[in-house]
Length: 322
Image 1 (cartoon, helix red, strand yellow):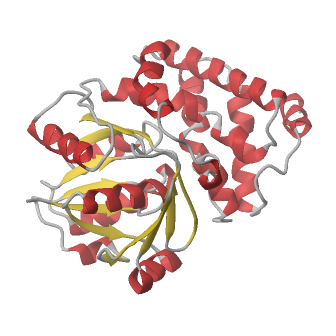
Image 2 (tube, helix red, strand yellow):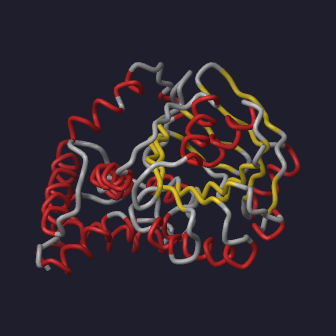
């Protein structure tokens, strides 16, 4: 039986690792700083609808200490802006044959991973999860905590994808094999363009209109780049199973970007969400003023360690008209 090494045991990675371990898989977590220390000393607490559990899982602070073998599967669950550092560490300690699953937002991680490893798999991640304090993660849906569809990058299916998907289903997730996984991840990217809005501004109609404008730019850029994207109707139908699950709002803390600001990490993944659209716009001659402004504001906000939801929409208007 192969081992799962979860590199980045935060909100999504922590939930995936705990559920895989519960289903009988051999799991090792890789975590950093106070989160690593809390897991090593007291275990990983999983808050979920209906209660909490503590999982005493093996954990290391550096992926080199995992002693990775060719038969291992690494689930890369760091934020996208942390991928390059993670991949450098992996390349220096893992055999090239290792299986690497990019369970992350954005669409650049698979390209970056393929520069160093041949066996790369994209994963569509729709797991509403939270990580705000060391040693604690939570998921807001039960009994199915989320969707984790998988496919070989940049496309296709094989026996490894079938095995990973089967293991994820056995762990309680909804998982299917998706041959055009990047088309699905591009659709998810469009939804993630609202992460910066959720992180920066209070909720309301003005924020919703802003998300619509960011997504309109995103659709125009993807079309100009001739990049296939799954239809919105198919995407919504795939996620219908999650809307059928009991939802515990007490465990919700907003998007992953909002959680980065809440934890005052000093960084945020907007360069690989809104910034992906900005890049495509510059490459293909499509204006992207809203995404560029959101990217800039999110980075400034994170660097200054300002709290989430503390900007007024007027701040964005001033930036757009500057």
